[in-house]
Image 1 (cartoon, rainbow, N blue to C red):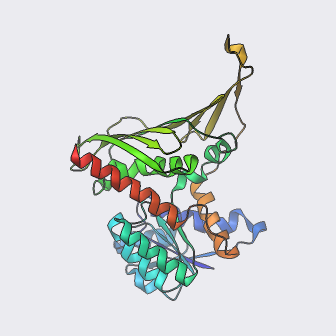
Image 2: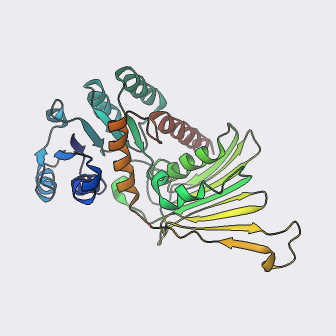
Image 3: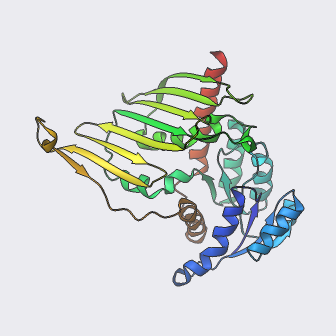
Length: 316
C-alpha cells in the first residue's frame, strides 16, 4: 500500500514520520505500507521532509494521483474540500485533518463521493485515539454534566481559523460521542483577543436527554491545559488528555459520610502517541474494509455544531 501526505508543515511532517516508522515498529503485523511521497507548496520543505523519511517530494498534489492508494490531507482548512475531492474521485482512501471542511455542504459532498466509491474517509479527530479516552469509555454510562477545558498559547500559523475550529472542535467531537443525544439549546460567548478570529470561547450545550456540557477553549494561555470531567449518577471521571491519565471517583455506599466512602480508581495506562494509533487504524480500515471509528459523518456533525457556535458568537 503506497501512501502520500499532502501538506508537511508542523503537523503534516508528523504524519510522514509515523507512516515511515510503522513498518519498522510493527513488522509482525505486516501492514505492508510504504510512504511513497510527500507534497508541499514549499518545494524545499517537501524535499527536506522527503529526504528525512525516504519518500519522493512533490509540489503539486495532483502528481500523486494514480501513484498512491491512500493519503493524509494536512493542508489549511480552506483547502480540505478541493484536495480531498480530487483524491476521493480518483478512488484514493483519505484521512482528512479536522475540521473536515469549511462548511457542511462541502462535507456532505465528500461523504457522497466516498460512499459511492466505497472508499475510506476518516477525519482527524485525534483525541478519539487517546489512551485515556479509550479507557474512560468503559466507565461512562449516562453523563449528566460534562466540563471540558482546552487552553494553549497563541500560534500565528493557525490565525486563519478561530479557537472553535482549531481547539474546541476536539471536545465537541468527544462530547457528541459520549452523550449521543440531540442538542436542544446552545449558549456561547467569545472574544477576539489577539487576532481577527475568536481567541477564547465558552459554550454551554443542553442535550435532549438532559445532559449539559460546558466547553471552554482559549489560545491566549501561557500554558497548555487539556482536561475533561464527566459527572454521572454514582461516579465522576476526570481525564487529562495531555497526560493520557484518568481517575474515576465512585461512591462505595448509598450514603457518603467521609472520603473513605469514595473509591478512587486510577487505571494503569500505557501512553501511546495518538497519531500513531490514528494512522494505524486508518491503514487497518483500508485493509479490512471496516468503517473508521471517526467517519466522515462524525466530522460533519462536529463541524455543524462548531459552525452553529460561531453563528452564536457573531450574534453576541
